[in-house]
Structure formats: C-alpha cells, structure tokens
Image 1 (cartoon, helix red, strand yellow):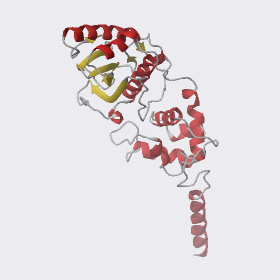
Image 2 (cartoon, rainbow, N blue to C red):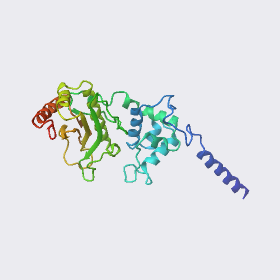
Image 3 (cartoon, rainbow, N blue to C red):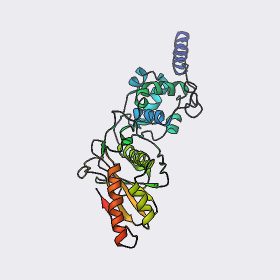
Image 4 (cartoon, rainbow, N blue to C red):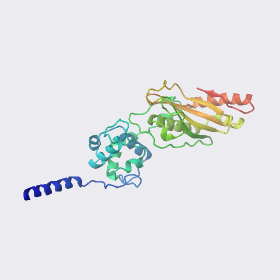
Length: 295
C-alpha cells in the first residue's frame, strides 16, 4: 500500500507539473492594444493579417512551427475549431476581430509577437496598391492578403462616399446587407478597395465631375455598393463596375467581387464619362439626374 501511495503521489505530481508548465504568456495577458508586441502598437493591416492567418485553418502544430508557444497555439485552435475539434465544419468559430484573438487564454504579447512575425510579409507591401491605380478596372490581391475587419471611410475632398452595401449573389446570400461585417473576406477587401479608389480619384476630381456638382441638383454624394460573386455556387460572375444615379441626390459607386476574389472597380475615365452622361440628363430635366449611368 505504501508503494502504491507513493506511486500515486508521484503520478499526481507529474500531471500537476505538466499542467502547470510555465507559459511565456499568462492566462489573461493582453496582447493587443498596449504596444506589448515588440514594444510597438500593431497596425490595422498587421491585426487583419493575423486574423486572416488564423482563419486559414492552420493546426496547433503549424502555429508552433511559426513560433507561437504551445499553450497559445492549442487555445487558438480550440477556440476556432469549435466543439468537434475540426476545422471547416459548421461549429467553427472563426475570429472576427483582434479583440476576439486577444481574449483567448494564454494569448498575450509573446504569442502576438510570434503571429506578427509569421504574417509580417503580408503587410510588407501595400495590399491596395492596384486600387490606387485609377486606370485599372480589374485588380487582384496577393495570396494571403488580409481582409479588413473594419471599414475606413475615404476622404472625398469635397465629395462624399457613404455607406457599405453588399449584394451577395448566391442562394442564401444577403441582398442587400448594409453591415460591413456581414461581407465575405473577398467582399470586404473589394469594398475597401473601392473606397480607396474613390479617395484616390477625388484627390484631383475630374473637371467634369466638378461641373456636374455645380450645374445640377446633385450634391456630390456617392454610396458604396458591392456585388459579391465570391460565395458558394454564385449566380454568374462579375462583369464590370458601374456608376448609377439611383436618385438625383445619390450616385451608387458600384464595384464587383469576382468568384476568384479579384475586384472590378470604377476608373477615373468611368467617372468622367458618368459625369458627362449625368450632365446631359440634368440639362434635359431641370437639374435632375436620376437614372443616368455608365458601365
């Protein structure tokens, strides 16, 4: 009995020791928001890159290979994969925000620093570089490009692009939804790209657009709309961006997300042509431009 008791105590001590192995991060340590990762605040791109990386389905072993310590890797995968422990099933709980990642047990500054290092190349270049080329109607993203989790409204330099409106072109898609967070990863990327394209064009707005604003009843307002074909079994595919005066007071700034996740965006030439078409409509209708459009 004495030997059995000693054996039991030894086993208990061994198990307790395994469970209490030191972790570089405490169970409730905060990793985001205080500059704890390498002593610096993470950028929005870096946070989005980490979320995208975790939602790609990497195993705990893969996260450890990337430098994430064992406790954090296991906790992150357990949270994401749900009760069945499998990625890609209905009970998955993918990460929606940096705060959700940070709330996972044992994810603190050391784990975040490792995730930042693992995803650093994704933010090394400008994800939206092609969106800033106002002549480019069709843009693509590098593999693994992060999807934004929040929307940055553009500076219109006297013009205004409001709202986020998704039309999801598949059975069960939301038609429409005005919530940015309801968008797919690809849809949110294209919506943000469309906003960046708008801001880039409006830094030096075409003279035709300035004239349209001055000579008609339009007030310089646009609304950001995205047709998203990236969902499962989408009805067709994107064919081109569009500008459409839904009302005299509001022109829809319409981009499209193709099945492959690339984007179709309005170009500067399209804006010029739309301004000309709408000015003709306004001239013929006492300043009212409703219905004018270009593709």
